Image 1 (spheres, rainbow, N blue to C red):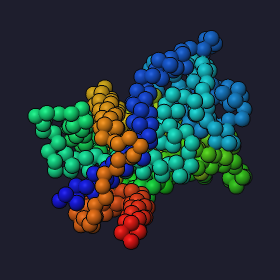
Image 2: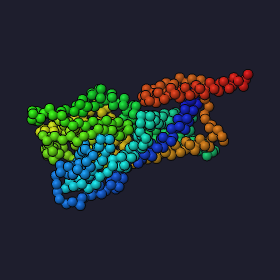
Image 3: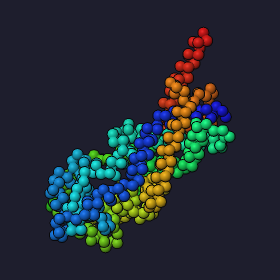
Image 4: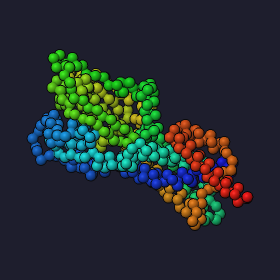
Length: 453
């Protein structure tokens, strides 16, 4: 059992040593993102709630045309209709994939615009998911830090109960006291912290892609087929003579883990399609309440997608998971072709729907934010106590790593294999760690042999 404890202690130490900088960044940026709606409501109050100097009332379609004229390099891809007192929000995109938000007041006059990359929410999200750098390697690194955080919590839990570290000694040094509180705090936050980490994994680059692929390939447990392959509009609504005319198309390539997008966009127009104001009449007839987003068609066969989401990342747009629904309207006659609601999701789809807002801190309002905040602050203090304990134990000029275990521990191997299966990227990283440990072991063994000789 001592061999098992030493193995956990050593790996716990090195995981903390190498992953703490990343975990600090993820935790602090996560705290920032927890309150993005509150920050943005204050920071962008003029954009969100203000009015244009123009007092003439126009239609939403005229407002959209004004936005397209003012930002001629951008195409309108989405119209977000929010509850009062929020202004209507347009999401526009240019040919390089850059997004711009344009706000229309109650008269549908332009109030303000924003560069999407520099809003508070998107900056916190980009820092949290890709450290502002992006790229596959960085995304994997962020995911790896989250996986090793779970190992740190579980290994700490084992060591705490194995050595009964929570018990107060008759005489405590500063290091012993620091270690004891490090252990106690770790026990308290293990379950909530693991819950926060696992509900964020659907965003991750490696495991998130596995989860999403499984959800797509198995609609019964994941994402309904209709949501993966939206219906098409009836092009018979277009006159036969012009039906085969080539229409501009829009391609959007996005990666969830990077929370970013690259796109080639052309402004699709169709004289035979409904206007947004006409569509809103059909939406009202279907008793679809605000808030909702309208994704515009990008081809002659495309549909209007009218969605209510629980994890949109847009201030004022989120709804309760059970209210989540995706509606498809024909772009020519405005009929509701089909609809996919929360009840039709499989178990993985429902996990996304509940887990992400829980992770973001808005599933059940302020209590969710406060709980997540307290857990994150406790995690930061946990790292501080661990680092402090190490400094008190560390000998001058040495790293003072825990000793290597002399024998292979079967329980430890089983535990790590199970974690590696649950978190595949973590499992891959274990191969590298084992190789490093072997190199260290053979190096020490060689030195020992040389000294004996």
